Length: 102
Length: 239
Figure 1 (cartoon, rainbow over the protein chains, first blue to last red):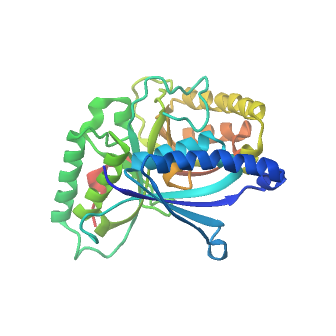
Figure 2 (cartoon, rainbow over the protein chains, first blue to last red):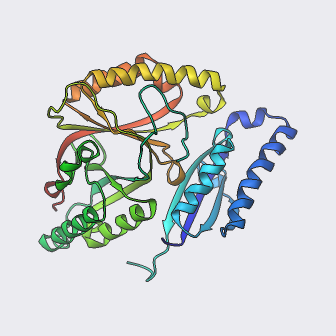
């Protein structure tokens, strides 16, 4: 298994804006627990960046995982927590090349 | 296996393996006869042989009949789609799936095709249509995402929708279509799912999709469909 990069583009779906600030905070707290579990298991959150000006999506989040399986597990837990129902998304995964360019 | 949406009458996750789909949408680069030839064809064939020995399935057919795995196959789609070749393999694991795409690309695939690889684990088991073991020379690949309307729907609305879609899926099976279950792509792509079919004719596929329109399948999804005659992969891997 290879060290992997996971790239997550997202934007709020329309009904995200229909939630109250308290409801939004509650959802975010649940997803933060999912992210903490991934970090505790060895993942690295490289960062979250704003890309709305050049993309259909609003933000891009970049993570490093020990394997693509760990990236899948992270996403599966986020979707189980309902994240995908409130944010539209597109994801990419890539494995590290040992020798650089092919 | 975590399911993105639940099981239905037609689709079950029981007994599914941990296999991972490797779908490809490949567009010929064109004008590559000086950089792609018999050597690259042989190298790709050798990688496909290795993958088979490592437990890969190399066609939709082999998801229904493991004995058919001696022949890698894909859909010839250039007659009506923006990609020339579309196909579906299954790898033993997610890691094996991604590493396999790199091996194929490096063997020479990347010289011949610009390819989008879509990768993700199996959710539902294959379901055979009526008609028994007849020839099904046409393939159909459906990609879809759950849209904002589905995302905003209540669990009851989604359950009702799933029941209606099952009517259409039963209609597909009654048209002798074999459905290779469902795979989950959303963790590594914008599309959320793949459904791969074998069918007797384009007419059967068109009639089936009309059935999906009749039950308002597309009220909750955005889809893209690829259809093509199934051909041996080695015939399609040529400059």
